[in-house]
Length: 246
Ligand code: CA
Image 1 (cartoon, rainbow, N blue to C red):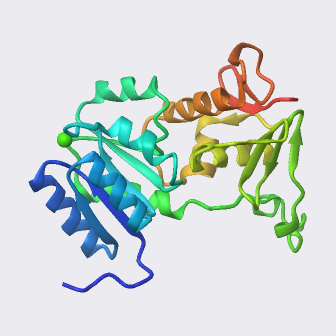
Image 2: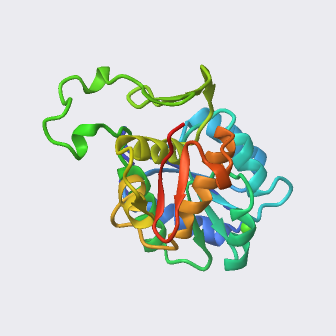
């Protein structure tokens, strides 16, 4: 079995069922990832601090500290991608109502190949969104010096991946920030959920487009945005979302 290359992406698998944990570990290891497996929430948090994983595959149903609480605590010190494993589809509805901060969800039972595809999609996601990605010739060399995008009291520094509201930093997950970066890249454009998925997740992402609504809800909450009278993320009925006027 080859050792993962030093530059391999690090995946932390948090799963208390040993057989499933080993299946996932083995599959991801063979796919070239540096994989570590732990079986409890406290071990997951400790491992995440030490290993600084790129992706955490996090089982929702863990003894003691459950996946939701682990994710919340993880978010206080890490902006890694979190892919949550849920045992039933209806758990997803519960998760949707919570501000968990996971980037994606996979429902058990899943095929390892499906999990791998989701991880690959997360890791392929662009870390920056500049205007040059969709408007050739616009601001390319100056991309690193792109001025903050300002919408009312909100300013979004895309290269620095920092959002501020009234001058105070807003703590966003990667997914939330990427959504905001996408929306601010094209003010006035009504984005369909699929367009946002293509831009923020990946065009290869397949699943329930309702996922966009979950992350928009979290983003709005953090921005203090009222969905009924939105200043930053406006619902476009029958379509999706567009940037507000601030
Ligand atoms: Ca479990």
